[in-house]
Length: 592
Image (cartoon, rainbow, N blue to C red; front, side, top):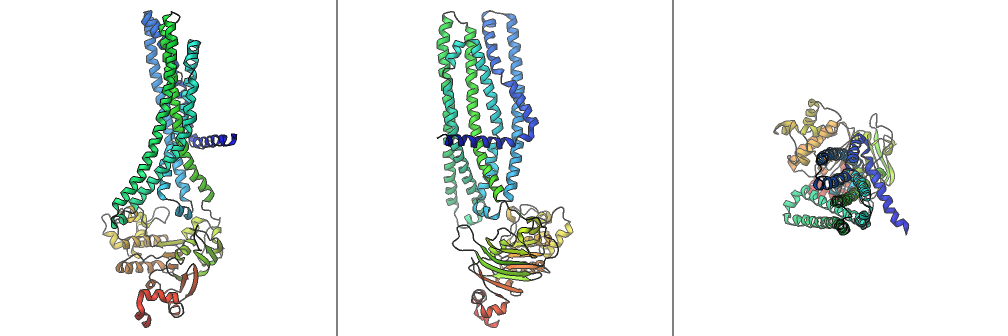
C-alpha cells in the first residue's frame, strides 16, 4: 500500500527539480530575491512586538520615549519590509520570465526536430498550447516555492514569539493549528487533478481556434459559421466548467484556513480575556498576542495559496516535459556523412512502408532507380502511394523494410541537414511564410542573399513581373501562408525558392494540380526552367505535364505496376491508359 502513495510524491519531487533547473542560470537574481525573503520573514513577529509596546507603554503608561521608539520602529519596519519585498518579488519574477523564455525556446527547438509522423498524429493547437500556456504556468513554480519558504519561516518566527510571550495563550491559539494541514493534503491533490483537466481543455480550445482560423475559407464557402461557433462555444464551456471547479477548490481551501484561524482567535480571546479581567494579563500583551496570532495564520493562508500555484506549475511541467521527453526519444537522427560531390543517383530497394493503424501498406515492395540527369514521372490513382514515396526520399519518413540509397550509400548515413539541402521540394501546397517576397525566395539559403540572385531566381520562375507590380515589390509582405497572392503567384514563388536553393535533385509533388489552365501554363514553364540540368522526380496528377519524361512509373495500391515511356505505356498498361483517357478522351488517344 505504501508504494502507490509514495510514487506521486516522488514524481512531484522530480518535477520540482526539473522546473528549478531552468532557474539556476539566474543565480544572481535568485540570491537577491532570497536576501529579500530573509529580511521580510521576521517582520511579522517584529510588528506584533511593536503592538505590545504601543498599547502597554504608549497608550496605557503614556511613555513619551516609547512613543518615539514605536513610531520610528513602525516607519523603519514598513520601509524595510517594502524595499526588501520589492527586491524579492522583482528579482524572482524576472528570473521566472527568463527561465520560461529558455524553456519555451528549448521546447520549440525540440518540436522542430520531431519526425513528420509525430505531427501527423498530433494537433497543432495542442502543441501551441504546450508552448504558450503550459510553459507559462511553470513561471510560478520557483516564486511560489520561495513564498512558501518565506511564509514558513514567518510562521516559525511568530510561533516562537507567541510561545515566548505566553505559553498558555499559545497553547490555546495553536490547538487547532494541525487542522490547517488539511488543505495542503486534500486540496493539493485536487488542484493537481483539476489543473490537468483544465490544461487539457485549454488545448482543446486552442485546437478549435487554430482549425477555425486556418480553415476560414472552407467555413465561409460552406456557410458553416454558425456550426463552427457552436463547436467553439462547447469547447469553451467545458473550459469554463473546469476552471470553475478550480476556483471552487481554491476558495474552499482559503475558507477552511480562515475558519481554522477564527477558531484559534476565539479560543485565545475567551481564555485571554478572562485573564485580563482577572488582572493576570495586560491589555497590551493580549492585543500583541492576538496580532501575532492573526499574523501567524495569515502566512499559513499564503502558504496554502503558494501551494496551489505550485500544483498548477507542476501540472504545466508534466505536460511540457512529456513533449521534451518524447522529443528526446523520437527526434529525427541522421548519420555523420555529409552529402558531397556530384549527384550520381538514388535507388529504392524493396521498400515497404505503412502508416500507423492503416489496413494495408502505403508502399509494398518498391524497387526504383533514378539516375543523374533523368526526369522520372510517377503517376497513379489517388491512394496509390505516390506522395508517400516522395516523402521517403528526404527522410520525412523512414521505410519499415528495404532501403533507400543516395550515391550508393543509405540515406540514414547522411546528416539530415546536408541530405535535405541537396533536394528541392515543390508541392501542391504552395506554403509561404508571413514575410517579404525576398525573404520567402531566399528562405533555403543561409546568410544574406544578393538582390541580383533573388531577382534571377524570380525571373527564372516567371515571377519577377508580378512581383514588381506589388506595392513594395520584393519587400511586400505576402501575408499568412501567402494569402495576399493568387495560387499561381504563390506557386511561382515556391519554384523561385527552389531555384535559389539550386539543389541537384528535385521532387515535384503535383505542383500544378491545383491551378487553373492559364496559371498551369506559366507555372509549367517555370518548372521547365527549374528542372533544366537537374535530376527530377515528378509526381503528376495531370499527365500533360510528364509526357516527355525519360521514364513514367505507374503505381497502384502501393506497388509499381509498370514503367516506361509514354507511347509504350499507352499500349500495354491498362492503368495508365485509363488515366490518360480520363484526361484526354478516346479521340486524343487514337491520334496519339
